[in-house]
Length: 108
Image (cartoon, rainbow, N blue to C red; front, side, top):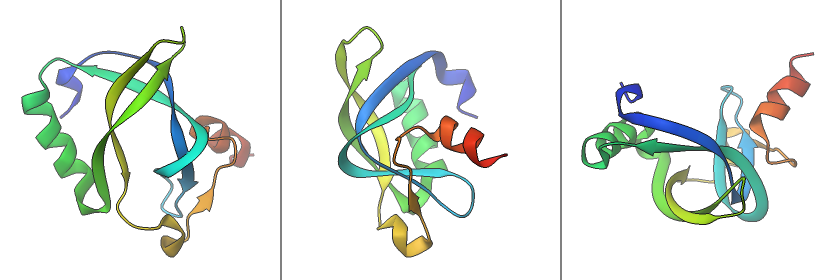
């Protein structure tokens, strides 16, 4: 669905608090900790963003937020944050802000 719009991706970080939900996926909320992720460069925002909005649904809100690339440069990006408090759904804070590491640590 969205893959046809992705030109490239690269590691990036942003500020927030990352939670693990019992359903097995992460969710971001505003906060001051580093959150490690991936920045996707899309070739047609007009077509891609409505698809992403529909995929994320009412549980998330799309906001503009600054991200930092590996080389230290900063830019603004669309980010999906939780529309409600993730702890109400059993979410637990991922202190490291790194979803991949959290998954690797909890698969053993």
